[in-house]
Length: 73
Image (cartoon, rainbow, N blue to C red):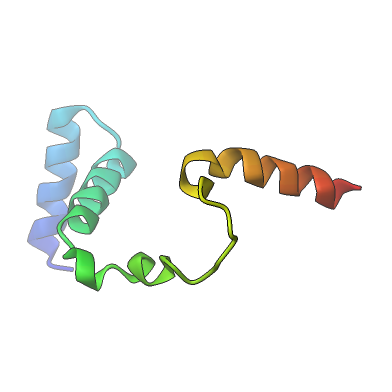
């Protein structure tokens, strides 16, 4: 990485009074939001399975919790 950019980063963090990780998180979030939807690797997961449940997207937390309880037995 360019040493001037590193110095700018340190100065920016100090002036803003925020943590380095906060700036890194914000930068990563911004970068990921700018990825075109068709390039998002997560989009390839949609439709891979067939649960047969019509309300899975609305009630996924309930189904995951039920699955976790069954696995404990």
